[in-house]
Length: 338
Ligand code: TXA
Ligand code: MG
Image 1 (cartoon, protein in one colour):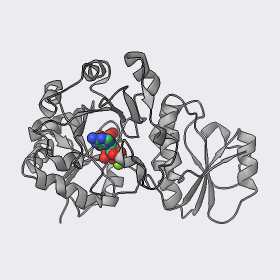
Image 2: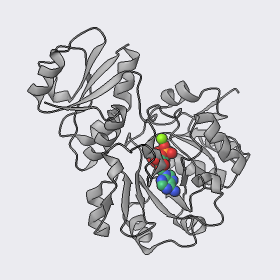
Image 3: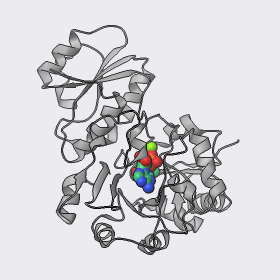
Image 4: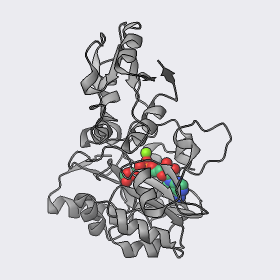
């Protein structure tokens, strides 16, 4: 397939909308990461997403909307808490899971009785949804198992030739995927930390449970609230290990293992004393910067031919929890405390 490279001109966004209307796949920028979009009401189009990404059939998709009213079209049973969250955080990097209505084909939710809905803040994403005239099912625009793309170049590296078009827009502002919260059953449950923090959710809702799978590996055969959590994820080619400790402990651990192909993923303000090639993640106290670098940094290690990457350990609070959650998966849960 010859993939069209579209710009963000009004004409090109209209073209993207047309392709989506016709059942084609289009990769689009959002404020979190690039998404691989299809008409959420078109089963055949949605099936193409799974094929193009090599995505396991049991991993449900997020439906992107551009008006709050659409939420009530996608679900017949929107809890009051959803309206409260929408009011506080939409448009923005928050995905809300509600009971799935008749309008949403089962394939979108991988057969689950629920549907994940997000109202992005990215103007480009919203214009494309409006041009398509339908809600868009969209996972991150990477091959399944690869890091999520935050630039058009990374999307093309994975999907050129596999999708009808890529809208080559701005680099993603948040840099990691949306926060996912489920409102289907009991206390609201955080399934994936992201741009909206657990602390912010608790401020608005009071009680919110953080799912175990956020910081623990899912055991073989165990039921999970969010199927995405059980898959190997966000993996660069190099082997990542998180080193949990202060700057001196980190440097000592890494320097003792200096060899060809060994690199360190460091906080910007703590590179002194590290004697192997350094890739930076952002300052220790700047989690927003870390989030933006999170997927690009390990890919840089791959591009430089590194085989082993020792990574610093982000704070487990605020946006840091989301950075930690993604790094843990990139590291297949290898954490060494020094
Ligand atoms: O920021 C984002 O959320 C990006 C952009 C493109 O919007 N999208 C994204 O989609 O990250 P994806 O497919 O890579 O991640 C969606 C996650 C998966 O872990 C999936 O299992 C979970 O959300 N999910 C989707 N629908 C669900 C549902 N009905 N119940 C539980 N988990 C669900
Ligand atoms: Mg993804």
